[in-house]
Length: 348
Image (cartoon, rainbow, N blue to C red; front, side):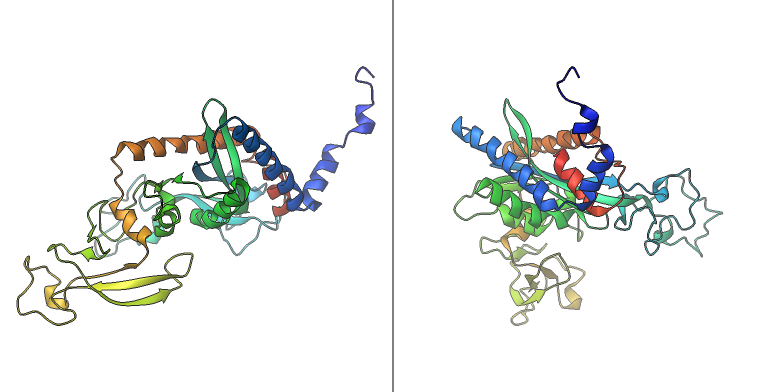
């Protein structure tokens, strides 16, 4: 043979590779991946480059190899999450995009005001059976983008569920906590801001677009220097009580109820300066996390130049996703969760 050996007798077959992907422990693949990252960042350190201070995180959807994902195949109850596809015993049903709107709204005659269509029946979304892959990426000037940590889960897991496992892996590999992080609006959660907030490093922060929740726009909710929210009348709202919450977010945390200062601890003789509509109902109240991250979510200056510079780094993870897509990560021809996780780790 021109190459000096018989390839057919010496190299593993594609069938053997897929069998190894199904049966091998992902820990073995993670060893290869993590050691490669350590070698790379060790080289950067030898060149005087402190890599990994700014990271970007995002997720990528992966379609399972099942007929339920084939729009040309007839499948009864295609998106019934209780009916597991026979082609893949591990994949789960999830939504990539979701909007409470329709492309062709029903006419007035089709939807009379006396009998409107429920919102749950007009939700538009992209649903798939499959998996999700989350990556943490660092951009190194003049070198490129590099994956620091990765995690594969079923597609029914939310984007924010990747945050803590991936950040834990990132710290273990880098040996330190990144100063800056940039994410899309799906990660607009108080604990993301809280993770990057440091008393000894006031410049560190998470660059995340604001997603409007609770009726307040970005920078519309103000706080005192002590961290008390300010009502629309310009008064600091005292903390009435705190409690431990286990339902609002993915982690257990302390929340507090802030109330009208004219009602608590004692009712004042004067009324609300702006005669707010809630004045007759015991005044305004705010229930939110007592963590600094909950306040940073509102007070972060997203128009500043440093925020824009950090947020630009998010394109690094988009380019990594494009490269992974070119390597076939989105539509793998394998049929269980272990094989999908191993293949993803090898791709990264």
